[in-house]
Image 1: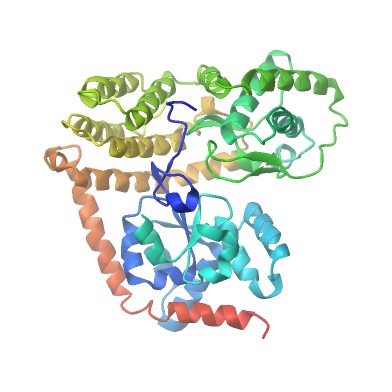
Image 2: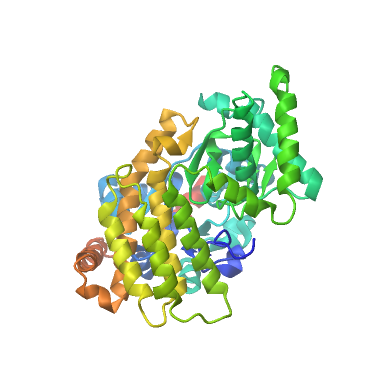
Length: 151
Length: 318
């Protein structure tokens, strides 16, 4: 491409995405990533896009409603402060989840596939503590600790 | 409309298939997103001059004119979000041409002409230039020069004295001189703050060009959320999609304000700037508020990992 701006555009994570430099890599947050206190604090100043899949959002709400007597409004307010968007499960995600699910154990891991579908396309990175459950995303699945280190 | 444009057998679908397969045939690899977008843009324009409307859903965005992915046939596969990183391939049956015979020959000829002309070395740069010549606003062309120059200086091995102050700053000023303010009435305040930050960064004796580039790209990406909404910057995009784009603005405006404030806080001189100091102050207050909200959840997150593990295990047949 010569010396034009039309080259790499993702900052950090070079080992993961194979390139990097300008913009912060977008992150897909699995529910359990938010258990990490340091990661929660770190998220506010992270400039890349941060989304929580609709399925993970549901889990988060159920947890706070059932275990902590909180409301979905509390969860929404928290996510807003974090700058985290709720990523709806649309046609594209359903299609990717189906493609991954067809190759794997869909009967027992449907929810994992539905979450992973949000990070199917590079450079999105899935942030989770269950890295082994998403090994088909290869290097684009990381723990919160690894993400903070890589950035 | 949405269903029609996603139809692989629509004229836009068939044209996409032809461009992808012709590139594959000529080079042995699927096209990059940048190539695909630019050829489709040129094909769309050229076809129109011959009285053929591809009804291509496209808009001006971060890297020039590009097709609107989620309005394109689902048989088209992109393996990366970035148009210049992704490869575009056709994953599906060969389109069904019936009913398109009248226009198909002309579209095939045009696609042949364009892929032959732009698949060679240097072809993509020419395609980008030709597409940009048709950009609705001169500001886009001028800002592209700034982006190209910033990209170039970061990779240059030659040290150029005062490049930031003497070359880049006037280049950005020239771009903003032609900013179409009346077409984008909501953005002037942010632009003033962004330009002030740029000025402070570029006037430093040794500017951090990587950081300047990051700040510049963040501005450009933010601006493009508005650019694509301008009536002159999109075509064949249904109202539903426009509404979705509009809904993003509030979130993206807020995200950009935070980014700008965070960068300003890193520049010592910014604290004395009436344009930047308020942004820094607000960010500081927001940081404190964020900590307060998190603390209000107390140890509420402590059992989250265990809970998730439990429900996902419970969900699986044992």
